[in-house]
View 1: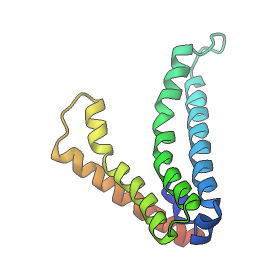
View 2: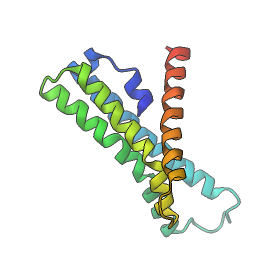
View 3: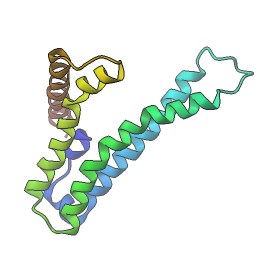
View 4: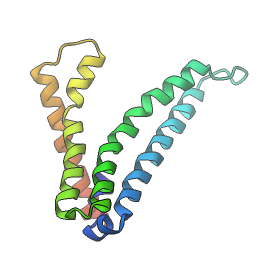
Length: 144
């Protein structure tokens, strides 16, 4: 999501293309994740046995956070386009939504593992958010 947001412009927000870029990135990343799980699940599997339906459902469920990670930035950009909001506000707000979500991942992982969030889990999320932001900056500088 950050990569998609980083390459959108004010003009993209104003004409609605930013919504399509972020929504398209969300959906295609979700689909790529589901396909990757299916391929990974097929490795070392019995070729005569179909993949259990429960496992296919679990793969879809595990990919839902990808859909939800793109939903708020898409909504922000959609509202900016429909209501002619200032792109200089909308783009950073959409990006902040992604960064805040990344920063919360340490706490989320701790809870999913049945542990109480600790200062270490909070810091892990902050490091993830910072590292992700640096990676996006490098991607934009090196490829655009």
